[in-house]
Image 1: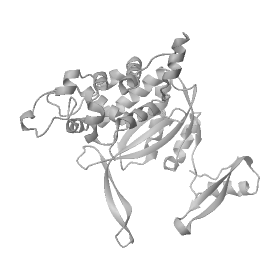
Image 2: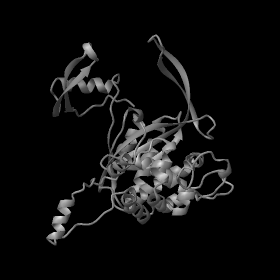
Image 3: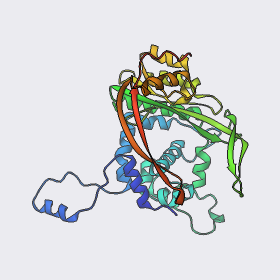
Image 4: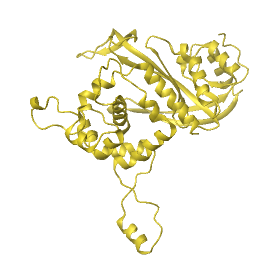
Length: 358
């Protein structure tokens, strides 16, 4: 089902964390008749919503960082590369799923295109008329075609992107968006590419697939790409540090680099107080290093570990300090085989554990 402009307007309003306005002409007329003060008059379109947002990015210095990004293998340019970066950023911000939907939902909006840097004539007629004689049918609206954006944005070097992200984090820290004590949450995700991407890693994994007869088979699949490691503020969900490495490298190789980078970004503005990890970052040497840095840490232990068994024993015997209990209903199966189960989860604090031998 194709997207419509109302959907991207709603997405934009939600992602910018602003309240969605509703129209009430009677109330406005009544307040005007009584000569009461009105908070303000706003246009309810994407250009008005993003105007203040772009001004904020300019004010804190993020726009200057984006202007320094340049694509590789570009011999000449008719459009500054920052325009491609801003266009793709807008595509992501407003939640446009398909490149082919850009002319109707984004490129044809003169207000938004003027924010990016295009003028009205470029929006209506395009940057150039190359290929106009070979075109079949009417020209799609917008300064460039979706294929041009797709071909140019992939030329951004991964290290340049990493530098922009970290520069933006420093700018936000200086602007005071983080609290005095910051709790970070670390996680990693795969960014898959083709094998032709220079510098990427590769990893072979077992994947379960189901055939037409419903039988499940395990096959080996080789994946190429990068691993993106993030340390995110648990309150604002804004990244504190970003690292990019080959997809075959383990998360534990980047723990200290992420923490060191985050602390450097926050220096003078906030302090990294606590970090929450998943099991991928479980490494005794790194946990000890974090403790020596004065940082509290939370990381799940694996089921087969001795420290897990030793912690559960006193908890089951009610020897620890209970921090609350939660009862939830879990649904299993579908259709006639559906059944529900009530699960009770209790958090118990245990001290004095010394069996984590790393």
